[in-house]
Image 1 (spheres, rainbow, N blue to C red):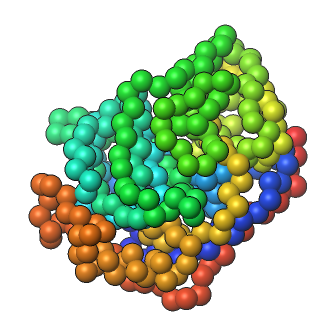
Image 2: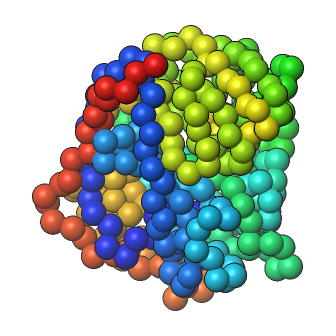
Length: 329
């Protein structure tokens, strides 16, 4: 999944210090998926007042039962990325991923799929014929400045560490949680985990107090540090916590993301994460001019299938600055 807004605004994401422990809800918004008529996803990141959580800068819940869906397959033709890693974590369904570094793989439940765009990559995502359209999460991680121009590459991890405790099973997708570390390559200190709680579970999970954290519920309900959370909004928890008390009366499935506050200014536009408007312009021009040195062709896709870049915005960037909230535990 990607940001296929036909008229994306260029957004300046300014760094902000960790706010300390907070409990703030950020609503999901329904946005169209690519050029697929009648297919939508729930997007909870970025938000105007919360552009990043650590280096996490994008979070879509696709296949949610609460969003508009006409039954059309959420296929996305070749399109580019720079300056980020895409994390695809499906709960069901099967997706064929192809990219400009030669990857041609099936994305299946229980597998972490991590694409590092670096200086530039193109990819496509099609539902495998006969498979359901799918349900899962798509996330982006902003690459730090010293790695933003690295060579693109793709990883698929079928064996991931699991943290188990009475009433809890947590799969660590990337980074580290409670002493378990994912084999996926991360370029900033962060964590991403798929958490499942049994009915009646009451547990405390240790977390890194340097990190800011957020939780998105997929199914069920969970109380996080006293805040009740159901599917839909993102719960932002701030920094300064060394543990997360979790309880669930009827069971819950949710995602935990976190990381050290990202201390770099970012410019986000379409499928690009950069440091300046000029960098965005160069990347767009390279894509439109079919610069195969940067965005090589994808095997199996004729050139006319490439998604054209939207018109460029002006130089008036829309700032997104983290609001230091007043809602406290």
